Amino acid sequence: MTGASRLLLSLVLAVSAGAVRAAETVRPGYWESTDRVLSPVRKTTVERRCVTKADIAKFMMGPSNHIYACAYPEQSVGGGVITFKGRCADKKGTAFDISGRGAYTATTLHLIARVSLAAIPMLAGVASTDARRIGDVCPSTSK
Image (cartoon, rainbow, N blue to C red; front, side, top):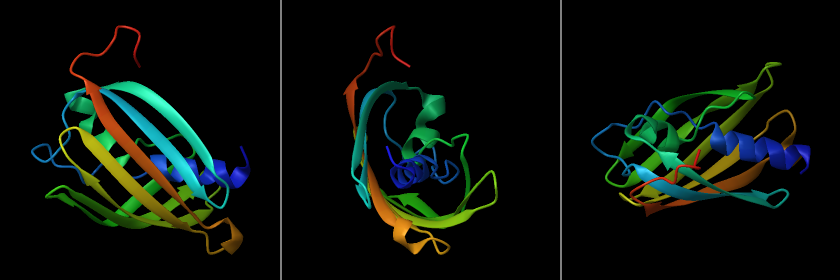
């Protein structure tokens, strides 16, 4: 995986969890998600995991990770639509603009994020997450 594809995948996963309201969410259960870096370099990963009630906000807007910290002054969740616009930075302080839009139901989630790297324009790109609920009960071996 190239640095650019790692960056884009990490940024999609770093979308802030703060905007999700408990009454307008996906259902807890066993989920499968497919994360794709669409450009500049294609990369796809698939993960199955257990989403508890406590994890729903983090799951819908993407988990924070150890590489990027993100702030989203513009974000909205409701009526089956998620939108966000903000800025992420790595531990060295390199900042990146990110914006995105998505749709959700009780059993599906789709997000598309666009990353704009002002300092390195050739690394700008697009990434997506598609997830679907595959069960009520999580296997004992799930994350």
